[in-house]
Image (cartoon, rainbow, N blue to C red; front, side, top):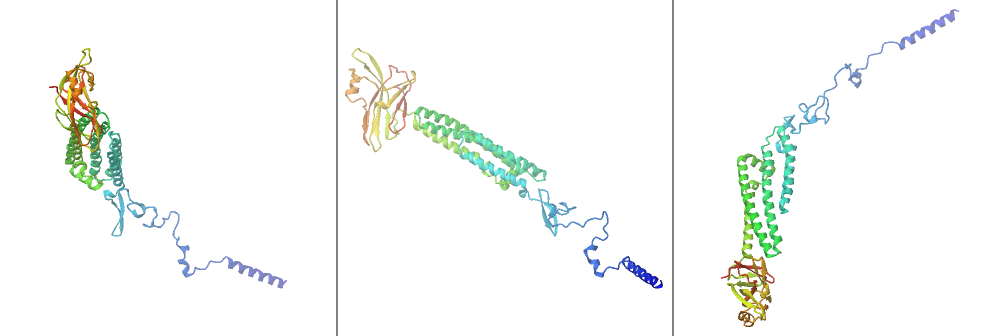
Length: 410
């Protein structure tokens, strides 16, 4: 029994020692253990703050603003982030570097290109020009943005308003000029009367257009004088052409007056021409002399007809033959509003008619050789009417333009 008791006591003692080893106090950490990451969170409890943001790492972190870190937070549209002695801060952009100013420049340059296109089209309608002017209205929003950002917008406002005004006044002037010249071109290939009418109407339109161009230049001068600084700024900053206000209208006026001068010369060339005036048309040089009266009996029964005697000289100045004769002439009787042609009776026995047909007094239809000349009379059957004053005599020239003489009967 004593041995069993002793053995039991030894087992219990060993168990007690083993239990004491498992539940004892832990040993102190090694010296370098305090340098591990496990201790970096020491002292953090609930509600402790995170580490400070790092400016310039490309991340917008808590607490970073344009004032504290513009490198990450950025700047307002009208400012840029600049380095001043190692400190980054937002600074105001030069006006020309702002998005608003660049937008204004794009709008203006596009409008100018469209305006140039309208001018080049030689349109006689202002609708296309009005559409171009509407493009300038898109400048209002970026101008307002610049003003809200504290920039001086006098140049931009002048650019939009002055350009709109000058184009609004130039468009009808240019359209009137284009329309006048187009009317002349369309009338050139028609009858002489229609062509002369086109010349007359176009000259009236050109005179009015020249006047409006003069008024436009006066207003442009006044506008430039009132806002000289803004005008110069618009020229320098946005490329507004200096001559837009300096000379655009006066140059247009000179161009219109030159066109009118050419039309007046054309008008003078077409007549009406005077008695005994030589006129060159095509290859023929023509002159109509003083008018006279003549009469013939129509037949053996004594019917009588009165004729207007038209003396004419014709010379061929060209290199080829040209057919010409009485059939080329017509006379207009304004009172009867009709044209007379050369129709004396060939079988008349009246003295005047005999001289006309048999004695070579009358001009015959014939072909003129180069350098040749013929003279004679053409009798025009005016149906016993001698009341027209003056007479209008039309000469149709082969290969040339119709020639008009206006001559009174002596």
